[in-house]
Amino acid sequence: MHPALSDNETAKAIMDDLSKNGVDPSVTFMLLVDRYASAGDLPRLLHLIETWKKSDLRIDLYPYLAAMNLLTKTSKIKLARGLYADVKQQRLKPSLALINSYVEILCQGGALEEAARTVEEDVHEGNEEVVMSYNILISHFLRLRYLTEAQETLKRLETRSRPNVVTYNTFISSFAKQGEMDSAVSTFQEMKRRQIEPSVVSYSVLIVGFAKRMQFDKALEFFEEMLSASIQPDSIVYSAMIDVFAKTGNLAR
Image (tube, rainbow, N blue to C red; front, top):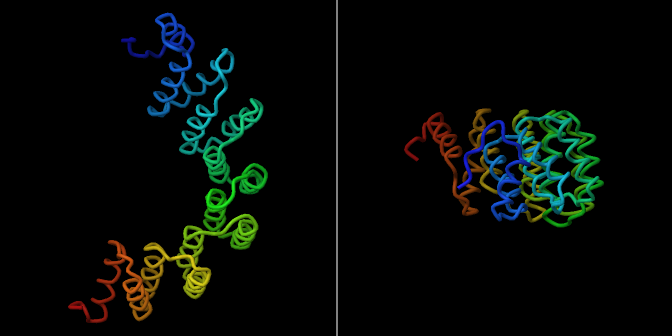
């Protein structure tokens, strides 16, 4: 068995060592990628990519995806830009997973326009696949209360695919958090008109929103509609409804 890695060992030394023992360098490389990615060791993973680029091994997208996923936890936007540019320089086609991780990092760093440009230029998949990319943008726009930009992003999404329940839940949640329950309900109704089935999250946001604003009749209305739709309430809904029944003197219900 190969000895445990130490801080002084380089990726090249490990690969050379295992190669001498008959281990395919490509296999060694991927094992190291997995090891560093699992350990969250971004510096070693980046060094490994640089070592790999100088080797004769076939260029592959996987190490870049592993590194980009780690970067989503650090918001190091400069490093992410460098990695993404490197992918294109290596003439690799960015996968949707890689693009979405990159878009998330850009959004975390406040570069929302650049993130939107990346989605428009680089996301070529259709149907359900493309929705996730736009949902990331919409979520960050709404988090910053950029409603106009979020609505424009929704329109661009609709030219390429069909919004899903996550898209609408993001809008509903944003409206509810701002106390705009009329807008939250109208968005909920629009989703239903478009034959997009509400989820437990859809109802939960509305029920909790109305309960917090002491509009117990509306909370009860959506709770009963949820049950009629055969959607199982979660702990958040049950907690809100216990509060509703307690405050309306119907706890026995």
